[in-house]
Image (cartoon, rainbow, N blue to C red):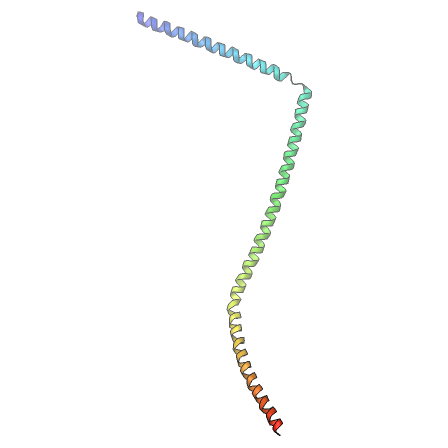
Length: 139
């Protein structure tokens, strides 16, 4: 039994020290809190008015900057939309040209054949002309 009494006595002392430390920390915390409250209370109404004005000014500047960034964003969005439209038009034009390319190639080939035939006919006509000139000179 005696041993048990010693343990409880030691635990009682430890508890007292713990409670004493806790009470001391609470007193110090309360003291610091009141000290900060007194410092905060010393700020006059003029100081709070200055702080409010500074806050309003900072808020207006932030709103202006936000509006400026929004304007830039809108301009960039408009530019990108225009670029997308132009790109779409170019793609459509290329697709149309690709569709027309075989017809154009066929036409070029046909015109080249026709040109060769016309050149051959021109040579024949030149020969006939030369022959006619020679006949006229001989007479």
